[in-house]
Image 1 (cartoon, rainbow, N blue to C red):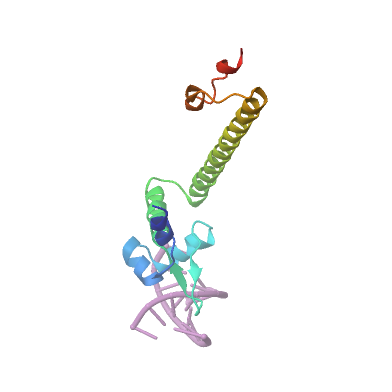
Image 2: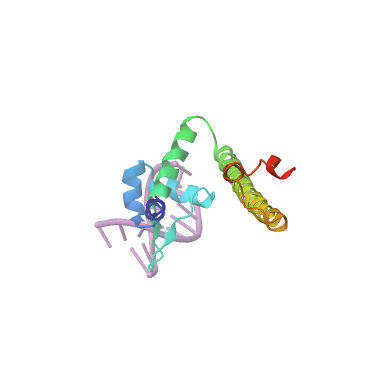
Length: 133
DNA sequence: CTTCTAACA
DNA sequence: TGTTAGAA
């Protein structure tokens, strides 16, 4: 399912198509870009090329605007959203690291004790009771 | 013909 | 945000 995300991030739509898809004027689309809300790529002729994700983002921006939020308010939303995702990723990385450490630690114990690991211990890495004797 | 930048009766 | 001029 990662291939799908890759396609959604491909910049292949000219501003004219995005205008029809979002019902926004070129002026508005370019303005939101200036505000850093979207970052379309440019083709060989310096023309903006948008991705499906950009279109979704623009549609989202339009909704926020209708809900009464101003540009700075929308910026805040995305700013906080990015930080939450960053923290989430760090947590995941830390958990994976802890998991690795636990597995390595268990291997160490097994070697020192010259024991073969009980299957129940593998099913629950947090259970060290088998090693307390 | 489409899009870009810059500017404002 | 709209609109427009001149260039690409």
